[in-house]
Image (tube, rainbow, N blue to C red):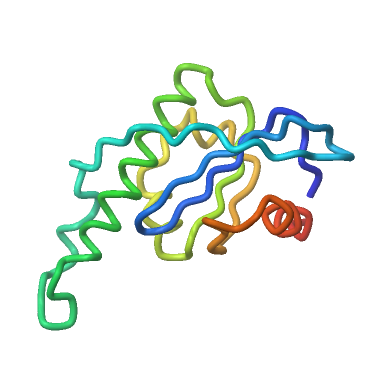
Amino acid sequence: MLIPHGIMVALVDGERFELYRNTGSAIEPKLELLPTPDLDAHNRGSGARHQVSSANPSGNLLDEDAHAAAVADWLNKTALEHGIERLVIAATPRTLGELRRHYHVALKAVLAAEIDKDLVGRPADAILAALREMP
């Protein structure tokens, strides 16, 4: 996949959210880490489908769903305000599934690609390599 100038890359897992922008060119991309947005994690996502039980005593799935919903809310709001022109989302498979449940039409319109891979905390070179592997 070509990584055009200005494209944003959102990396998400069950707890963390990193946001990058390509400040380089499509030929020589350079990912710049952007400040981490403040999220409202009060949205419990689709947590009603998860029960706190002995298999999940701490309710971590609820927390992960709330985090994914908060990320999606922020991305939706930013897309609606025209703050995102093109976006790639890379997330753990479970988190990506939860994010998709919350996509607004405006976010879908700017979404260039999704990667079901955990890239949070990886160096920029590893992130770029994963993006280049995309068709």
